Length: 134
Length: 314
Image (cartoon, rainbow over all chains, first blue to last red; front, side, top):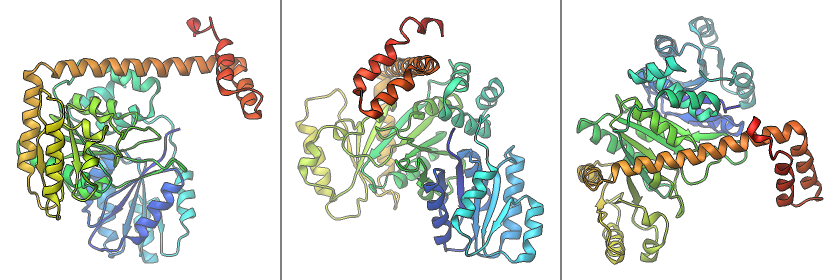
């Protein structure tokens, strides 16, 4: 079985990526191949990186409050490029009332501050199948 | 697989990315895909970038890719980072430095236990990018020690990157990585000691037996974009020299033969093991080794002996 591939993306303008790095490290230690984008990526850049890296999961970290604009844009872009099957996760500071519209837009799960990394690992392992890739 | 190959050939990036996953995964699908693409490509100039961890390879690759694109090339990048020997996972961070390179195709590959600075699938991934029409393919190895020389076989032009302060002039005379450079780059040229490092390299190259191609030593600051024009020119010069000296085609043939040997070995092992497992002799031999009843060599003989004669029928 091939390893699960995950893009950990910092979208938008906040400059704080400790959370993203902690998650990246936890996923790596769970046997996944994690591609980290670095800070300040545009939606378009995240889409291109996800396509080129052919990932199973796009894990977006966003602390700036722009999630309602940026995240649906990323999901739309992925769908437009035949990549609607990628699992999209969101981590960061997201008010409760924003979660339903994000789920509606296609976010599989939203993880807030204080989430145990094992919860994220379990969620990904439970939702991604890595059988035949094509 | 044929649809994937067709889409790849017309420049569909999603298809190219999926195809790389297929060759990384191995097996029958890989064989079918690569067969479909046979005869396509062969024009791309493959440039390998290797050097110590932290020498600035990723930054240099990003800057180089930009300069090559400005010169009208279509650039694909394959960047290899190590897999964890414990979890099998990997943290692939080369995209961080490569930033937002518009119009570039960048793929991060995990080494997945393969030694030599590359991953097992790197050669196949190069073939895919070549077939997809990229004119220059830049390969970045894992931060290499002194023995990671596999890049030399895969790349037309090998660029060895070093930085000031990594060691005295004796390091420059060691075998291995310092022997494989077609071009040497002293990166971070704003650091003190850059001239000493460049001089040590030049001295080493002068003392080496004469070679038909004399590797240039180029100082760059990838971060500041200095010296890149010289590097682009040197890469172009080396490519032209390979073609004029009749070495370009020879390399492709060598590489194809090498892949044939690897493919044969892989197929043979897989099929023989399947037969030995089906008859139970594999498990019996493995258990005997684990108990200490049998040494590994004798066990291998025993397991293999049990399948002799059978392999023509699998």
